[in-house]
Image (tube, rainbow, N blue to C red; front, side, top):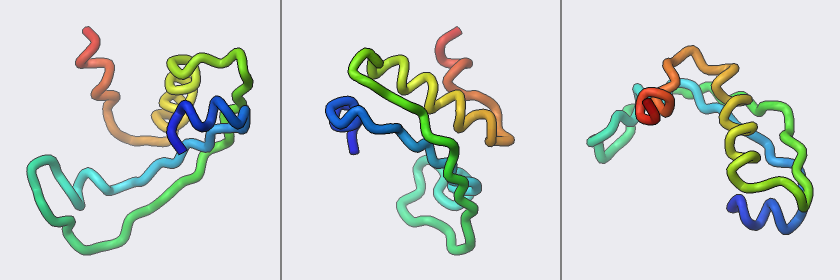
Length: 79
């Protein structure tokens, strides 16, 4: 669901981390390389009618980054 749909339902947002996808399908490639990927389903991020989309996105992103062994490329863009 999109962030707006999730807010309408007031249900939790479940962040999902996919390991190895950057190596299987780097920017500029049309087809993914074959091979396994590892998936981690993170703990749900609770939401309610008071939660802003920005806040929920930041909470979900923080939960995913806690499991990744990669640099936070978003922070480099914001500096």
